[in-house]
Length: 336
Image: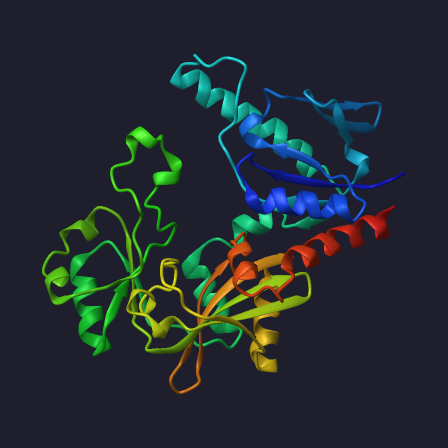
């Protein structure tokens, strides 16, 4: 039986578009589920009878189909809101439809015995930022002094103890929930970058009572690292974030044309990065690390489904899409 690769994402995912094309050029036709067209454009079937489990997905516009037993590898990429035949579902009907669709889709997926990049349970287990800090520290990484609290006096005491600048950063997403609501309901477009906390901000901490907030010691950096791991392959990008005022605190401002270059991690740091990712059962992840002026490597966070295409575009010798494709193809060969 010819085994296949399953890609689960949405119809607006450039990463998946490019991987799909690359896999086809390498002789493999992946089956893609765009969740923003599911279940409307798909037929899902899952039967349990006489001790047998069978499942099949069919893409109705193309009639391409995929059976449970055909799947050798899955790339679980990006979520999306489901699409139903009816556009006029009430709020309760839509909520119920989502719950039922989740059960159908993930019940089907969890029955797969295959290679995952990465399994949804592993992804969920790896997403909690403060747990990441705890795990990284246990594996030998240095981490910034950090505080999560919903009590303003805690923030003031923490700032006094640091005797150094302090930053605020979100625990979940810098998009401030904008990606979770309709465009018409977005009141703060553009999100929130990592922010140095000023004295004026310390005098206005009442908002901390509304929701737990995340504060850290600001680390003076020599440069930053984006370390992308695919299987056992490590791609370390050196980011010269201190060359531009716009990226000194938060390097994610892509309007600044700072240098990204390939670098080699010290053996012990690379080993820790791999150990951290594998400890979650992940086969892909992107780690953010800063290197101090004293040469100390400080772990910031782990992004278990992080973006990587922009790094490859800035460092063309990082053939990460090829690496990802080859990793998935190797699993097909091993299981065919």
